[in-house]
Image (tube, rainbow, N blue to C red; front, side, top):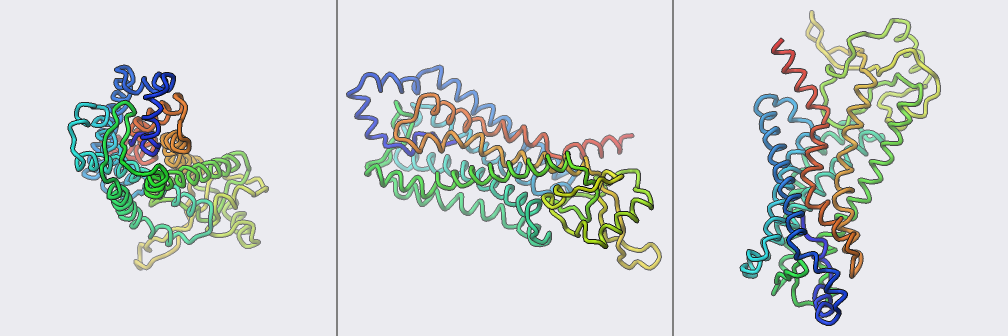
Length: 388
């Protein structure tokens, strides 16, 4: 993605490079062949990883279209597209000769592409964190947060297009500074920071903080769920459109267990639509390890809708939620260094390398999270069942 130094007062650092040999030596590594090869390698791996995710997503859409309604799968596909553009922009910026040949319009487009790809990735993962927050940590109605899904991608795309466009429009006279691997334009330092932070880095910062909080809280809640003895709740809330039949255990609970569960519901021990946070605070040990879910089905004789009690396996449900928690962690890993670099006028060498490397490898992290998506094992199991 974009260089962590894009928000720095490059003009001031240029003066330091002309007058201070130690500063010149400190930043000389940016133009070394070893550094360029390392970043280009990470960007190339990110590009290949993104293409792999997009190819799998295309296959899922063509062969297993029903799974494509899951938010996490769609987010993975769009994030892979953003990472693909980010890797391309990073490879372009690593080509010094190409960057120096660009006119002002070419430089503006490359900078816009870099900012657009990073913001699109950030906003999409932010939406995934919001979905996990609303579904598992609040009492918002299921129908409400499920309806929000249709707005996540359009709003993320719109914001990712408009914000960089506003920033690039202010960059009159933009130029490429090869020895700093950054863009610069003739304006006061505070104006440069104001433009970049209001249109770019502030949104990345908000996302990093929010996703880190959601992932941490949800991880603690799920951990308590595993450790506590509460094993039966009514109507577990899901973060996306899952096929409950795949989470339903093959062995149904006994009549005694069902009666015991009904008694608890009548005394208000467990309420319908409980969140994971509510469930984790239970204290009574149960015999059954799973969830009792009320589903709507059609009567075989009359065809009228009826309520059917179903048993959803606890381990499968929690493991599926656990894997989705990994999505909000990706921007924390890849963008934390970028934000930290732009919070100081002269970042350390280690911080700069960390920020650039993690940002360049974002596609690899997205691939790793995508491969852990709970939908993929279900697709594999479905294809194995068909062949057998």
